[in-house]
Structures are given as C-alpha cells and as structure tokens.
Image (cartoon, rainbow, N blue to C red; front, side):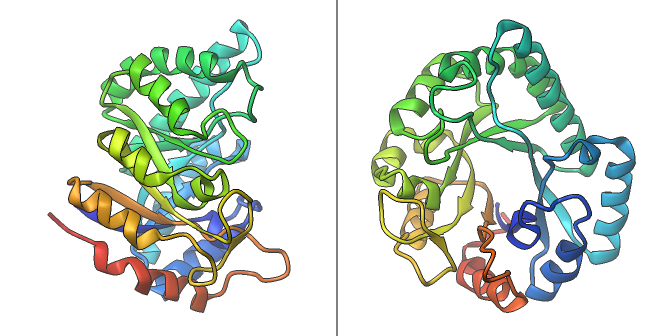
Length: 263
C-alpha cells in the first residue's frame, strides 16, 4: 500500500490552529489523505479531535499521520514531559484513525542531543506497541536527526519495528546527505516519506515542485523497489511572498499520484 497525502503545513504555514485552508484546498487539489501538524496546545485537546474528525468527514479527507514537537529534553526530568507529549500524539492518531506520528529532533546539540532522544524512544516503544503506532523520525537540516550516522545510532539502539525514519527529501538535500547511501544502509527502517523540493544541495532553499534540484522521483522509485508500504506526504514549505495555491497543490498531486498502490 502506498497512499499520497498532503501536510497541513503546505497550506496553513505555521498558523495551524484552524485548518480552514486545509479543508478547502486539499480536496480541490485531488488529495484524499491529510497529515495534521499539531504544534499548538489547543490542537491536543479532545474537542479538537472531534472537530477534525467531523470536518474530515464533510471534506472526504482521511488522516494519514499527525506531526508534533521534536524529540528532546534538556534534563532527565523533562524526559517524562516529552514521553507524555508523544503518548498523547499517539492517542490522537489512534482516535483519528491513523497509525503514525511524526516528529524531528531539537536543534543540533540541544535538547540533550541524540542520547536523550534515544532514552525517550526507549520509553515510548511499549506505548507504541499498545496503541499499534509507528514513530516516524523526520530529518531536519541542522537538527539532532540529520545524517545517516544519526539514524544508524538510533536504529542500533532501538531495534523495534515501531520506530523508524521519516525520510524528508528536501531536508536531506539541504543537509547535503547522500540519500542513496541512506537507503542502501537503512531503507528497511523507512516508515514514512515527506517529499519536499530544495534548490541546491547543502543549503536550505525550499521551493515549489519542479523548480528545485531534489530528485524526488528517483528516491521514491528506490523505496518502491525495496517494497516500501506507507504514505508519501507532500510538504510545500511556506513562502511569505508566495502563498500556496490550489494549482501548486494540484501540480504536486499530479507529480506523485502515479506512485499510489492500494495493495
């Protein structure tokens, strides 16, 4: 199974409290699946879950995943807070009818580094098993989750199939990471894919699809060859001088819809 989703970030930017544009624009562009970015405290409430489910029903959208704050804890005491946050994310995902949560790491060297992220993940595995969830760790340029070596450390420390990689193509490009090398070494641990367009390896310069240099199709084809099953989520990073349009979303949908597999 491979299904195409779109992240609310693509249309809401970082103003994610209402999701009005999401429910209007995603169906108009042809999307059936949505990944909700739940970064505001209000989006963690049971009333928000009920509201999102009702609006998804009206818009004929199905939740694919939920995205929350990054993994990290400045102190041992803060580990408990982050564990509680991620468990709540998993509960929301369950209630919305999906089975994936997504989060990245703190800025490189902050939040206790990769060591504390691993300690948090160790504590989350039993909850992921109880709730039938996948924990998808997204790479970000300049974060504790960025390189092949970062993911190798996590995969070695956390062998559970419940924990794996959210491969963000644009961010890996921005970090100058060889994604073929990542797939060669850790392709079996990729649980989720974000497609993003970056302009030029080794720098953060996100743009519209077709205007950058990220070889998204090659990378998806490689994952398909490995038997990838899951979602491909479109992420159009916000550009203040150029809001995302339905035409932008429709173009992205047309570019990647051919990868969908129902079985």
